[in-house]
Amino acid sequence: MKKNKHYSTLRLILGDQLNARHSWFSKQDDECVYVIAELLQETGYVKHHVQKICGFFLAMEQFAMALQKAGHQVLHLTLDDTRDFKDLPSLITHLCQQYSVTNFEYQRPDEYRLLE
Image (cartoon, rainbow, N blue to C red; front, side):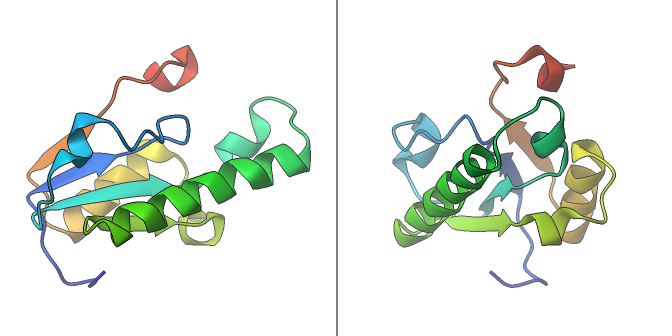
């Protein structure tokens, strides 16, 4: 994915929303970028075994690769890529500015902590 590319829409995919059958993925749109981000806050809000966290992040990476293979524009950010952002809103703000995004979309989180 090109750093200087502009997208009209940024769609955030959370780690528990890796569903290839979602209507978002029914058609390709070169003006839409999907963001899947590994965040440090996901590793510490509840105590998890390190293998569970690694499996969770691996599933996110594999989903991002599958979407790319299907022709979608995808930005998969690792923990290293997101380390300079204090939280998810600051990351989203940065990405929307970087890619000149005019429309931000997300699926309603199941988890109350994220919804807030």
